[in-house]
Amino acid sequence: MSAEIETRANQRELMRMRVARLLFELLYRNRTLYWLASTLPFAGQWRVWQRLALTRLRGEDVLEVGCGIGGLLADMLERGYRCQAIDRSPQMVAATRRELRRRRLGDGAATVRQANVQALPFATASFDSVVSTFPTDYIADARALSEIHRVLRPGGRLIVVLSATLLPTRALLAPLIAVQRLVYGQRAIAAQTNAQPGIAAPLLQRMRTAGFTPRLEQAHGPFWLAYVITAAATTHTTQAIPATQNPTQS
Image (cartoon, rainbow, N blue to C red):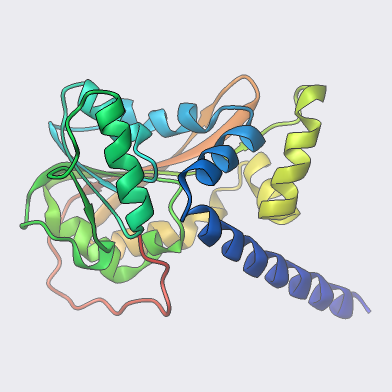
């Protein structure tokens, strides 16, 4: 009986993940919906979590993979970094360029490109750091990691703000935590809250295969927990790495 219950639970989880993916794809095509979805359910902490990448940057030349609506890219430009950014969504590219114009950081035409991380339009060893915040499963794709490694300079760094969650430390957060559980699933939230490093183990192993030395760390706030990976580009691999099936590109 327990096996049947587990099977049904897995089926429900699979259906939830499919619905969540469709919702995310819809949100990713509209700047306003993207902003609302990344702000209200997370008590306004999304930008706080994005900025966890700033203190981990190395060097001056930075590539952001999956720039969304451009908030973090603008933050980095304002701090004097020389930045490039890509996103697979033309709507997000347009939104990022608008954000740069709004913050008087240029028109973004030369800074932000529509591209896929599996085929980065940059020369080898172009960047000191590559940043990705809240990526979809493209970040675990072998071709994506190989391309990121290629454009990093020796000793460069990949910074991934992998995930974050609100913690039930305040009564007012209960409705938002319920929304997170609906979107991400009870298991995922429990894994994050219990700080189980195993949730990132497959990604860390893929990073090692691609020539990185990754380190997973927890960042704590007054009512949240986030996971951040910093991965140094330590070797240059020549071995062909097969891609995962049907990766979601950035």
